[in-house]
Image 1 (cartoon, protein in one colour):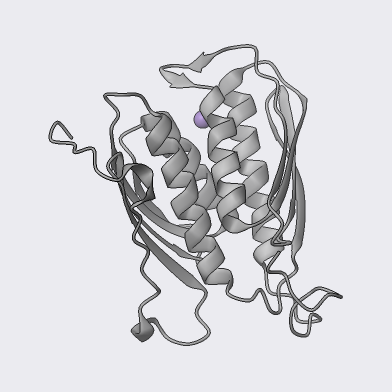
Image 2 (tube, helix red, strand yellow):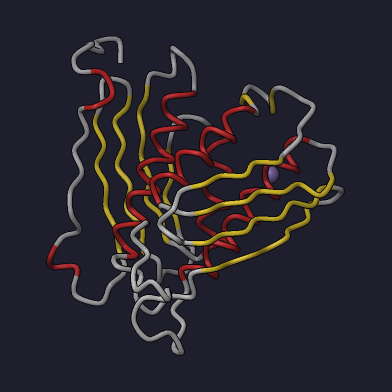
Length: 221
Ligand SMILES: [Mn+2]
């Protein structure tokens, strides 16, 4: 990272398609993202069991992503090296983009899925609700009110940046509403768990859905 070169900024992104050998019908996505600020590899399996291998170099963020994988049942492999000597922002945001792109890739045309999800998750004194519509229309409503600026060395503000990046890249409408809470670790962890549960429901296959679950016939935005 000391040899970081300023080239074309953040626009130089490579994204690879899922490997053909992975087989038809599998809901998997793989994204390789290279910029002058971060190197990220993400693969997801929507029909996994919530197993993960995650290393972003930011321990609290890893803890949250492990929670996201475990409680969404989306298998996730995430490795990221970023310019943490600047701060955590680029890495957190770019990992959000890469996970979102991998999930979008795995969802394909979104045929046969539930589309909507909602979950309220407590963690001790904190209660957070997440509501998801995989509409193809990115929109974030973010109502987490955390009085602290940091959890350990992790900036609370980055949770907003992560959710924004994830929601944009998946192409989803995401509402995060904190009902109440005090401890920032609890509030943030409850938010990640709620997103995991809501996303899991929305991505789930629904046998009663024939084709794309939209009266418009498309969920591409
Ligand atoms: Mn925790």
